[in-house]
Image (cartoon, rainbow, N blue to C red):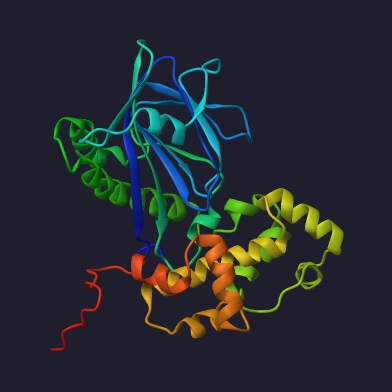
Length: 310
């Protein structure tokens, strides 16, 4: 499973920020990341006290949580989309914003995995990786040097940053998941074994017609107690989480297999292709067919072209 992880990232920009500065990123289905190349920042995800970030820190928000980044807690915050409208990125993919104080340089973007397992669901809402102390820095240092210098290399820098991000994000996810042991449910369920068991059941048998009552019965709990403890551990209701897992697994199959969409829908637990397509589009912002075209690994054919047969 770990070997199969592939990350596809999109870099928003390389941001050069002068204190005071602050921006807000809205919640979305896509996972987010911020890599601090130099300087410092505070990240507030709303779930705990703001987390300080320093040079070399990588912050991952696997569930696409809304959050705030700024140089200090009192700095004014604007939505990132508005900032980018007023301060568009230049030809090198760099956005410059803020005051005349201490500089912070970030690489910000979003990512997803093409694994058939919903690996990101096992991750906490916020994961901060110190690449200097966990072993990643031994081979990431040359990549960081490349990323730091890309702002001076003109057009195409953003594309290079995205490729670099694909590599180090993949390795971060592999290392984090591998270090947890063989039961990934501990990420979401913590020390609550019944909820961990329910999560494992959902992932292993997501295409079955689960109800809250059936899941509660499986782990030996009352319906109300199970629903409350599940939401506290995972941040979503059992049925909402089940839906997310089903659609994530379907997205993985669409990107990595040639199965018909109707087959993917049935494997995900949907009775008909129409209801599956509507649910998928609500979650991923595009219908299954288009998602397959844009996310399938490897070279893409031009419109109307036919694959060559050997």
